[in-house]
Length: 241
Length: 283
Image (cartoon, rainbow over all chains, first blue to last red; front, side):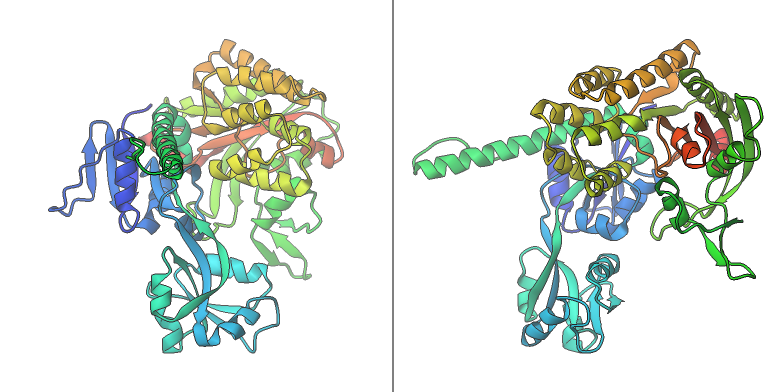
């Protein structure tokens, strides 16, 4: 029942790291940049390149057996997929942010129910995550879903605050926004279709083991570098891959 | 249609949550039938309570469940199934598993996998680890969505010997060969209540029965299998076939449900999702 193993890989900010870890694990995917092909086969592995938000969709329906996707997307999509492994890369934080000038008022507004003067409007690319956050705190907020560039919304007068992911925080800073609350953190995950999880168990196990090996190797070499640098200069080896 | 029961006992509450609700002419909240097993269990424990056991019932009909936003699935599905009430354990379980396999073969599906687990094992583990109800709910949710990352963190936080943590990680991780039973046996040895061991030997008897019944080759053990509905107390299973991303059939033992309904006796059953079965049979 094993046959072809289809791996969904997200385009965008996780692409490079995804391809790198797959290659280190012995699943190289040679993407031909010149063509617009989104499907590549090598041996009995098929790679499909999709928008990050579509990876869980392909996996949920079984069009892909496994996929790599950010926990942020998983939290937003809420799909029925199995989550197998934390791949460690693509770290970002889910935050609530507001314009610096209005940060104090916004912090008070999100601190609990009934603290806001009037209704809060929240611009976000993650409406479900945002809604869950405000609902849990009992705060009445109007969620305004946007496709991108949420940092623009407060300046343009569309919303008082935004819910977004940040990795370096530069975009926020450039737009004079400050973090007023943290929702959580996210990293890239390996997910699997629930049918494939059993039907292709041996293939998926091999992939998981290989990826784990890469992660353990990286953690090991990172530790080695740490101990070298603390031991002082002049040490050799311990260079991370 | 059924009346909505806001005070439904826990195993049925989840089903009430995902049921479609509306209001009848008296102002009573009604639901569209979200599940067949409950209906049959009700029938067995009330109208048919005086019929001799074992009782073999079958049904076909539509069930309606909320299609959660952003998830695959449909709100109405046509199910056929059978329930076996009042027959001792391993034989009844094996009979239902065999019937499931026979039905699928009759529908033209030759390649399928019955993923088999036992609801009692993880429940015993949770008691053994002294988990509170809130933590249990968290673990059940992580199992249902097979969130291994979260499960890993949860297992790490359990107050159990390090060996047990290792065994637990191993049996929950990925469906594996039969050595999963050995690992579970090692884990069960720590459990003084012996409930884990009891559940395990039930499962072993079912596997032995299924193997001698000729369907052992279809079975894949998965002790982390937790079904969406919470009324299962013994074996649980889901059936998968290549080309279909979700289970085409599922079932299990639900003695606890009949106890709640007032006539404690054993019951086990299965249902086929007929649209998926038809699609798979035509491939």
